Image (cartoon, rainbow, N blue to C red; front, side, top):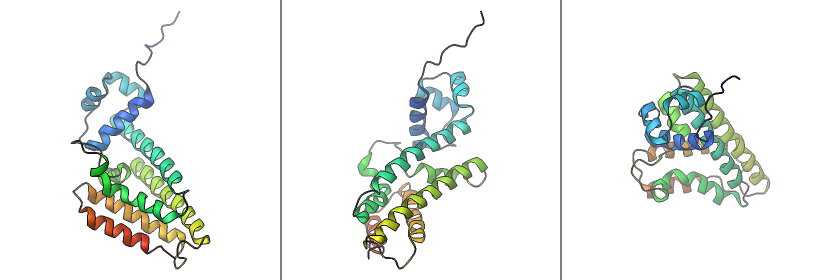
Length: 199
């Protein structure tokens, strides 16, 4: 009778979620395979067997991050009126220090962090972040289209252009938040962006 391999002693999804937190807090370059082995309490061979190398593991974590974010974004923007929900979406990067206070916690948007760290040198990372940004614009565009039809949002510009502007706002705030953020100035900027959409 042929021997079968030892069964995996960990849940792949849970392991990926925990790795996501580590990558998010430290970044791709600063997280070693040994860091992952130690933090996840999983043998190196098991990690390689389940996820491949560190780069593939990281990109799987980014995909998981976006999957969760997209689900939350879609749900949030189903609200009516839309503008208060949009303000919450934009405010999130500016509120990181309120949401989480431990040293070394996740900061910024993991997709944005990946853009800064790996794009454009890594073509697969570029594809992952490009798709994520495209989906953000598509989801926000659809919400803005509904809000324009309801008379809540100005139709002086197309919903696609408005959504693209909001992508730049949320990613800019996310990136700046990693270096420290003047919350009052950030919130004033968010309010200016939201007020600019008001019909």
